[in-house]
Image (cartoon, rainbow, N blue to C red; front, side, top):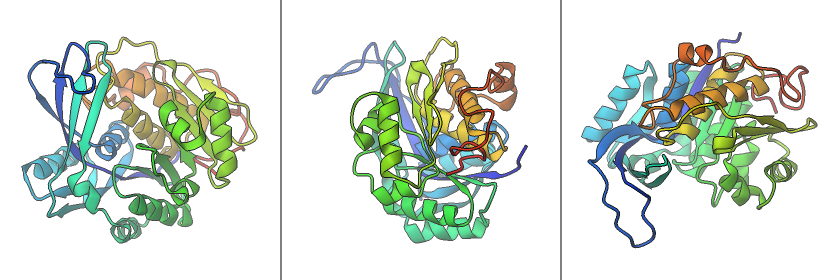
Length: 326
């Protein structure tokens, strides 16, 4: 197994969550229960997911000079995450407003705040200070400025690290951001924005054709698992974990963090995808974006990543022979 690090370049938020009988429509008020406060942000969640699975994790981002920021930093520190490059800036810490219904579906609105202060220069400087290189996995999402994401991914790739882009949100994505990613991890809606509607496998192929630098596309399919589409290999459909969901908030972040942790540990991409699907499934069995994120022991107990190899799993190549290759 490898011993690379996971470096997350992304957002930190505080989540304010209300559970309601159903999700409101436009202009509608739905009365729910008491508000709950959780630590979140796609970047923060992904970092926690990777750390709980045993990866050495560093974080690059920003929080505000306020109580939310102090608490957010302390929460990451408590997970063993290196926060030396989590800057404190004169903007409010990011906040997400989350409504969850009785079927565990959710609606989320985000006020980015300090996340918008992450600059390309700061991101590149942080990666240089961390001396990222071969074996490391850099994971970035789009809740920070696109220019910072593009600069971080390009610098990491030039240093020989594997790069994962979680294109959330997917609208207005600069092609340079995609071109710097070894692996892209959209959900179906994000994939439709990036490559047009239709069959996920065909859309992923279009994305690969338009962006030669991308080695693989991993489409998360919610309750249907995931689809790995790599160059010159058949699509690999990964079935979902058999769980009873309570709260799907953070499942996608768990998937991305688990994927990065598995790749940093030296697992082949198809095996890493299976492990990530299982981790995401387990995360839905407890409330909160981070509340259900599993430990390595819990994931191993579920048999994650131990199943029959899928397409391209036994033979290196097509972006699957080395973690996040391509």
